[in-house]
Image (tube, rainbow, N blue to C red; front, side, top):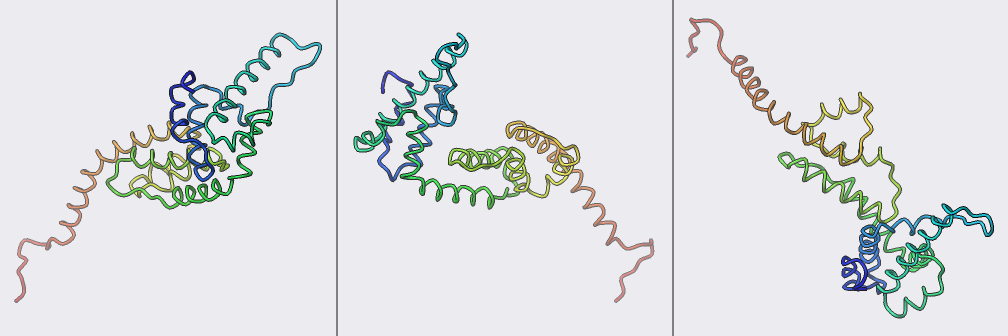
Amino acid sequence: MTNFNPLAKILDDNRLTGPNYVDWKRNLIIVLTADKIVYVLNAEPPELALTDATEEQRNAFDKWHEADEMAKCYILASMTNVLQKQCQGLVTAKDMMFHLKEMFGEQSRSARQTAMKNLMSTKMVEGTPVQEHVLKMISFINELDMLGAEMDAETKVDAILSSLTDSFNQFIMNYNMNKMDVTLSELLNMLQAAEDLIKKEKPAVMLAEKLESTLKFKPKGKNFKKKG
């Protein structure tokens, strides 16, 4: 595998044995994504007419076939000999992954439940930088995607917004009122900008609260005398 993507070393070092299926699959997707061929794990091969296929159709088919063969090589080369023999007769990389999922899929389900629990239970701690918190949430979301959980873009954003501290309530209200539609990266940038504003406004708010408290308990009148 040394002639392939240098990242493939992570597959060399973590070959699929069975119990490590979840970690192996995550590493495989990293390598295939770097090679821009991860799509073959989910996409069907383009149709190719036997007689009147256009050059564009033939090129698309050849490109998909080449990507699929490369993905199959990565898969087969990164598993034990026993598993290789079980997968060698399968036609596409997608078929191989489906077969492996049937054998080890329960691990994915358990890992998916854990990742979902982490996503829904994680709450931002006051004083934590919003970037640190949101990146943690995005890592849970990415893990769920990798494990096959189906979450639409709106649900992902809602999960992050609902985990924020109360200091972001005004931001959330504005976001909902304007019916925004943003990527997670865009949301992170917006939250960092909001955090900067919150930090600037906080001293003024604290001063106003202090003055209000002082005025509330200050005795009225010049001739106030303590009763004793």
